[in-house]
Length: 215
Image 1 (tube, rainbow, N blue to C red):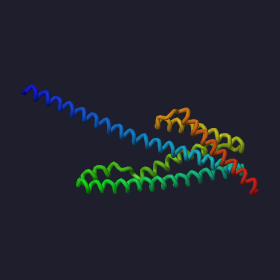
Image 2: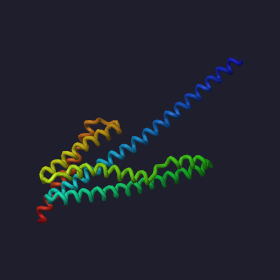
Image 3: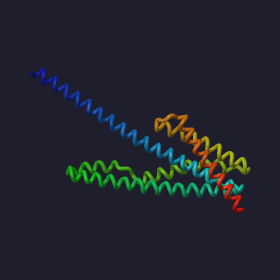
């Protein structure tokens, strides 16, 4: 009888140990998934900042060969875009938090477990942190074309350098996004780079057309 009890006890202890290990692995996977989502959002934000600012600078460059006007437009695009990203992310995450809080309060009323709600509320995303991260990511991407064009006086060379720097950064962002999303790197990079080229080309072409008609 004692031997049977020992076997049962060992089995239960083994099962509990396996459960603890499984829970730890699941928590680690969830944490890694959340980090990957944050990093992927940061890459996408930087890509938005890069493409929009480079396209804006190319658009201004299509109608003006003044380096100052091009840089000022790029800087204005950086500030406006970063603020827009921050406000949009803040509102979005805050709305998500409100929804999750309402759902958890409803569950708490049904289960009568106030401690569960308090523990889970600490795991909710921070709207301020999300807003700051989005603004920073957008600014990092927008700085690339600004730095590329900031020290070049020649009009034609300045446009070429902006396109080259933006293309190189797009490749980096495309590879990073593919790695985080576990997607094919070549295909992902190609989509990102071609999309960036298309945005810059359309902006440059339309501004050149509008500028020629207006002037």
